[in-house]
Each structure stands twice: as C-alpha cells, then as structure tokens.
Image (cartoon, rainbow, N blue to C red; front, side, top):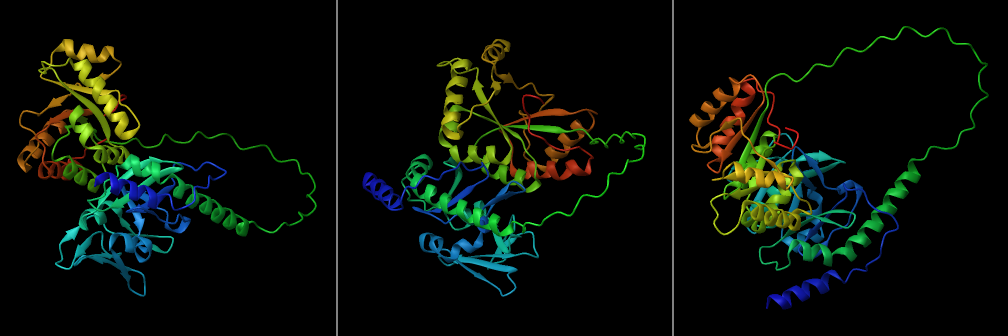
Length: 393
C-alpha cells in the first residue's frame, strides 16, 4: 500500500512541467510545499528567518495550501489580526502581541510579524498546533519548506527530488518577476550637465583615528548538552531566548532525528558526536565515524566536534587523531544536571564566580524548566551571552 501511495505522490508532483531556469538562485530562496503541491514563489511571500524562527506568509492559506492542509485564513480589515483555523481548532495572531493564542486563550510563542504588507506566522508553530509534519531540506536553488500530514509516506529527500521539476518552474517564474520589478525601478536616462570647472581642493584635514569600539562585557557561557528525548523542548527554550548551544548526539539519535538536526543547523546551534567508551562492540573511533556518516545523510554536512562519556584519555586521543576536537568542560554538572530552578541558581553562581568564559557540560539531565531558569538569570547576573561551543571556542 505504501508503495502505491509513493507512486501516486510522485506522479502528482510530476504533473507540473520541469523547466530548468537559466540562472542559479542564491541560498536564501525558500520554496513552500504543502502535501504534494509546491506553492508559487514570489518576492512578497518569501519565507524568512527572524530570531531563529522561520516565518511563512499567512496569505498562503487562502489558496492551494488551504485545500491541501485544510487550514483556512481570516484577517481583519486593518490586516493586524489573522486567524488560522481548521479541524475544529483556531490559532489567533495579533500583531500587537508577541505571542499567539487559541480560543481557550492558551498562549503560544512566537507571535506573528508583518513584512511586505503581509502578516507572517512561524511555520513550526503552525505545523505543531495543527498536527502537521514540518521540515526544511536543502534543494535545487535553495531550501524546501515542506508541511504535510502525518500519513505522508515520502521522506524529505524523496519529496525534494520529486519536486525538482515544479520548483524549477516556480523558480523561473520568480526570476521573471524579479526582472520585471527591476526594469520598473530603473530611473530614466538623464543627460548630465557640463562638468564644473576644475577647482584645486584645499589641503585635507589631519587624519583622526577612530576610537576603539566598546567591547562586550561580561563572561560568556557555552552550554553543551547530550541530545535526547527532551531535545525539541530545549530547542524551543533556546529559540525563545535567541541563544545557541552545542548538542552532542549518538549515531542512533542522528539516524532517527533528521528534522531536529536540520532545525539545529538552521538556528545556529552546534552539533557534536557522542561516543561511549563503555561500548564493548565498537571503539569510540568507529562510533564517531558511523555517527558522522549518518549526520552527512541527515544534514549534508559533517562535524569536527566530539565528546566521550565513560571514556579514558586514550579514547579522547583516538578521536583527536581522527581530526576531531573533543569537549573539555570548564564546569561539569552532568551528574546532577540542570533540572530545577535551584540547580540553575547553583550553576549561575559557579560560572559568574569564574571571572572568565566557561564551557559547561550539562549532560543528558536537562529540562526545559531548568534551562529556562538559567537563561533568565544569566542576563540578570551580567553574563555576556551564551554562544554555541565550536572549534574556536
């Protein structure tokens, strides 16, 4: 049955002609597809990133997307209030508020923003609220944002390949739109007046060196987390505060959570490999190599960051000989983790008292409550920020 559905979906996608555009797109072109339909690509409804969330135009839910997803859109006359509804549910976006809410007044973050005269809504929130799958995949000419029902049998890669023809057609029309706008914006040709007589300029004033710009004050803290079952909720917290972290992932996590890994990459988080020195079946080097291969399949990229648990110095040396950089934390709280407000306050006291930048290994025992409490207190404690741990950290 699944094979028949797959064949049907591929046939539907190939109904659009596969015209190849004459030029190559820049990497910030985002196509939007719902179910098997690639929506029209226009400058005025192009998705964009804002504060680590990808926004899509709410106007798409008045045409093909409404038919495909069952989600409809209603807006007030001033275009400051938008309601997306379907399946007995409704999500209300008010531009005067930084959040959305449903009819029971439950609050959801982030809210809507306005651009090009259109109200844009966060794609991940819309998908999550209405029970849709959501992914961002590298594709021809840029990226493909795909929203579909849970019973869709195509994988991200299968759909991106099958949608190449429709995306080429949409992209060619998009280039024509840009060319027409550029032609309209060209100013009329004006014959310049005769040049003024040559005047010898006075001596230039003495060169004054600009003052050195103010440096960022406060110590920075790089949070390193073992990816696991709560990773998605932790990403929601990090996105809400506009900060990044480093997630260390096992091969099995990478193989199963491709969408989460692509979300991490898009939001600027670092991805590292996690090897277990107590694994009797494979060496840490074999684990890391297999994990990096799985990461390449999921994100089209590999990493040089790694961490070892239950390991010894020899295990770290084996990974470093492979060209990987192993995590060496300044503060290790993996035994207790970051699960409560009390543990967040304890960690704040430790890092604030170091008087220098810190790399913190949180391990797997991290909850959204503990992470939110730490990030909330970090600004009050005068910390300079929470950048992701990288090779240069």
